[in-house]
Length: 268
DNA sequence: ATGGTAGGACGCCTA
Image 1 (cartoon, rainbow, N blue to C red):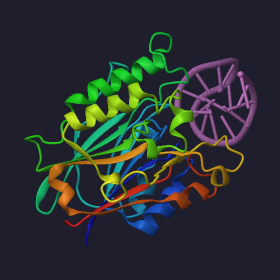
Image 2 (image 1 turned 135 degrees about the horizontal axis):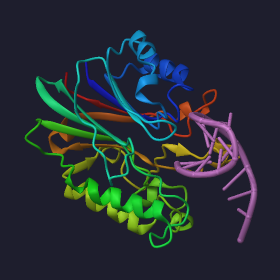
Image 3 (image 1 turned 90 degrees about the horizontal axis):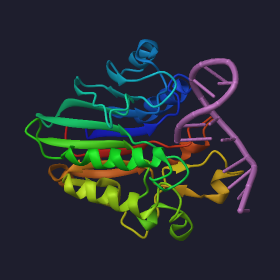
């Protein structure tokens, strides 16, 4: 039985609990990391998640915005809920679990979207996004705290040309500007992280995990971006079996604008 | 060049 880890920006966990239930029933990942739960901790639907067979739950939420949560079939220990940029936002959650008899750290991130104007001088939200990525530099893949690390989440950046529907048309659009894409790649390599979604699907093959709500027909126009990511320490790349992007979830009833991404490892 | 949709919480911010 492979170890399976999934990530999904759910855009309100309470509204979309039926979709979470459908996804967990059909795919049964060992761990699921959600972003944009938009749910204060005291209102988190823990009982619903337990009823789906996920007994081990950690969350870091706030009212109205942001929020991350990690569900697991195996025991987890909350390691850290780190505050980035002294903003008081709930955008990170790190848990530890065991796989292959060894401890693994799992970081769940929701990186700021950054607003519309890609200029940090006039747009504080873009400044915040760049500062957030800079602060992520000290989240390292190799630490004394575990034998391996996984980092997942909505990083709100599509780093490669093959991660967007039009590289040229998105060069000045927040999520694909050079300062973001280069910043994210610099942070990823400095941290010792491997981009698992590109291990078996290298460019120029396109990968998207997000399609805007604003399109008349998201599937026909297919103007997607790869904003969601699964990274790991080098210790896990030899045991990566595959990564699946569940594109069909974008067509479910009242969907999130992001779809789940699932990585399977030959570990138990 | 613009505006398009969605969620939380109920006027407007964020994505």
